[in-house]
Length: 307
Image (cartoon, rainbow, N blue to C red; front, top):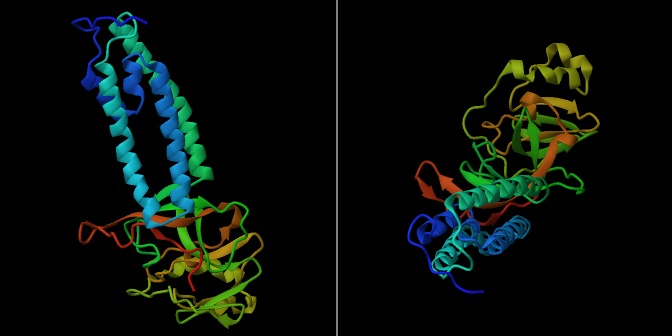
C-alpha cells in the first residue's frame, strides 16, 4: 500500500494527541491515527490481562504478585501511549481522514468499549475479586484502618467457625469474623466468647478503649435467648450477653476489635445468603496518622482463619 504524504493542517494526526488518548484508554490513540484493528487488539488484550492479573493477585497472594499491580497499571498505558506516538509519526496508510470522521470513530470506539468493559468488570468483581478499603479499626490488626484489600467469592466453600467473611448489610459490604453458625449456642462472659458451652481461644481479639454499650441496640437479643425465662431480667452489654441460639440459615459475626466494632451484638444475625466472599490479600495500606504507606502490610496474605 503506498504511503501518503502527511498534510499540513487539521487532517494530520498529532502524535501528542495519540499518546494522550492512549494514556486515557489504551488503544484509543491507535484508533485516532486510523489503526482500528491494532487499537482494538491492544484494548482487549490489556483488559483480559488485567482480569487475569486480578485473579493471580487475589487468589495467589504475595509480595511479588502484588507488585505486578502498579507495574501493570502504570506501565500498560505508558507503553500504549509510546507506541501510539510512534505510529502517529509514520507515513499514512491511506488518504487523510477528515476531522469529523476521526472524531466519530473515536467516540464510537469509546461507546463500544464502555458497553463491553462495564459488564465485564462487573462480572470480574462478582466472580474473581472486588476491592475494598477498610474504613475503621473494627478488625484490629487483622485488617487495619487504611488497608486496601481484595475480596474473593466464597463460592461453594463451606463456611467455617472463626473465618473472616464479607457480607452485605444495609447496602454496604462489611468484613467480620464468623464466630457461630446455625444451631450454635453463643454467649460472652466478661469479654470471653463462649460457644456451645466452651470458652474460645481468640488470640486475634482485642478490647481497645471503653465498650460502646447501647442498651437499645441489644433489645433484639431477648427474643433469641436459649433460656426464655431470663427475658425479664436480661441486661446484656458489649462484653456480657447471651446465651443465644443461632437460627437456621444464619450466622453470628464479631469484629476482632470488640470495643470498636458494630456487629451481630448490635444488628443481629447475618444471613448465609448475604455472605458474598472473604478477604484474601492487602494490596495497599496507608496510615492516616503518619501519612505514609505501610510497606510491611502490602502484599500480606489474609488467612482464612487465625489460630
